[in-house]
Length: 92
Image (cartoon, rainbow, N blue to C red; front, side):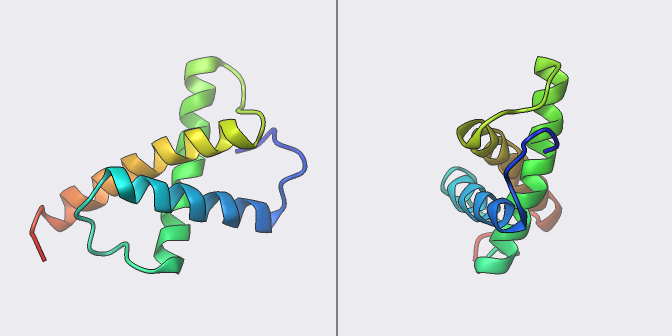
């Protein structure tokens, strides 16, 4: 999410881990997203999607840690829903 000075790579990884983990509480059934690294990747991709969505809805980039986290969670939930539909909604 551009427009957020002060976040370095480690900051985005932490936001990605948090967003990916929290989105897993809401969207169940994605077998491919198990473990720390896939969760971080889903969170970071979700952050990019959430940042784009926020900019489209609001007309400006997200500001602050909490705003970035909220939109990263929303984006991560969308990523998990897409992954679940691609995998098929099979139970383990």
